[in-house]
Image 1 (spheres, rainbow, N blue to C red):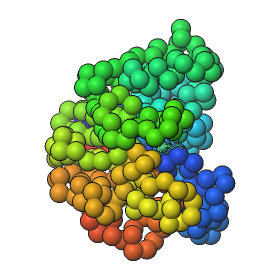
Image 2: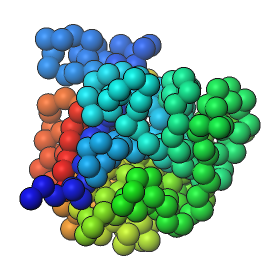
Image 3: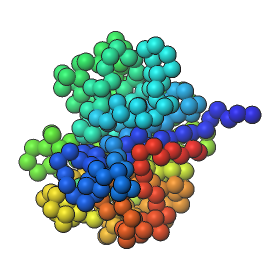
Image 4: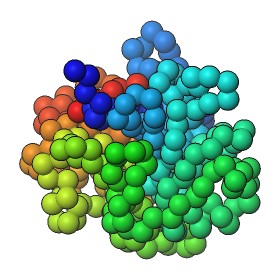
Amino acid sequence: MKKTSDLRVIILGAAAGGGLPQWNCGCPNCSMARDPASGLKPQSQSSLAVSLDGEAWAVLNASPDIRQQIQDNRPLQPRRLRHSPIKSMVLTNGDIDHLAGLLVLREKQGFTLFATGAVNQIIAENSIFGVLDPELVSRKSVAIEERFFPLPGLEARLFSVPGKVPLFLEEGEPDLNVEGENTVGIELRAGSKRVYYVPGCAMMTDALAQRLRGADAVFFDGTLFSDDEMIATGTGHKTGRRMGHMPIAGEGGSLDALAHLNIYRKVYVHINNTNPIWRAGAERAFVESRGFEVGFDGMEIQL
Ligand code: MLT
Ligand code: MN
Ligand code: ZN
C-alpha cells in the first residue's frame, strides 16, 4: 500500500546570501563554480521545499533564485494552466536571501505566507511587496511556538534562535544573539517524524540543543567554517558571529554543538561561497567524518 505520510524535503538552495558563485566574487570556490570542468556546481540561495504527498508543497524561505529553483525541480512546476503546487511559504527571517523571492511569486497566484509578526512587519513596510495581491496571498503572522499547518497534516512551529535584525535594518552596532521574532527556526512534525530548518543561528543555547535532540533531520546554518573566514579570505571584514552566524568549527561551533544530540541526518545549508566545505579537502572531510552532510541544490531526503 502506498504510504501517503512520507515527509519529503528537497533542498532548493544550499548556498547563503549571494549564492555560489556570487556575482562579484572571484574567490577559489566562486571561480570553480564558474568552471563546469571543476566538479563544483553552482548553488542557489537558501530555501527548502517540503511535501507529504508530492503534490502540495510548502517552501521554506523565498529565495531570490526561486524562479530557477522551480525550473530545476519538477515537483514544484504547474500541473495545468495557471497553477502552482506551492501552497504556502514560510519565512525564517527578513534577510534579502529569504524574502526577495516573494517578488518573483506575483502573477495572481494564491498561497499562504507564514512568518512572525516582526518579519511580516518588514514586508508590510516595504510597499513593493504589495505586488502580492492581498486577495490571493494571505499573510499570516504566527506567534513563537504557535502551532500552524503549512500543508494539511504538516504541523509546524516557529521558535526563536539567537540572531539579529536583517543587515538592511542595522543601525549602528546591532544587538547580537537576541532571541525574539527576527530570527527563527522551523519545526516540522508529520506522524512520528520531526525535522528542523535553522538556516541562521548566532549561537547554540541549551534550549535549542534540547529541542533538536533526537530529531530525524536537522538542516542547520553552515554559513562559515571558521568565524574569521571572511577576514582570512580577504572577502570581508566581519566575523561570522557579527553576521549572526555561528561557525561550524572551533570553540562554540555548530559541529561540536550538534554532534552528540542523536540527530539522524545533520545537513549543513545556507553555506557561504567562501566556505571550504564546498570542495574536497580537509575541512569537508572533517565535517563528514563527524557525521554531517554538506547540503546541495536538489538534495532530497525522505523520512
Ligand atoms: C545573512 O544570512 O547573513 C544575510 O543573508 C546577509 C545578507 O543579507 O546579505
Ligand atoms: Mn542569509
Ligand atoms: Zn566567492
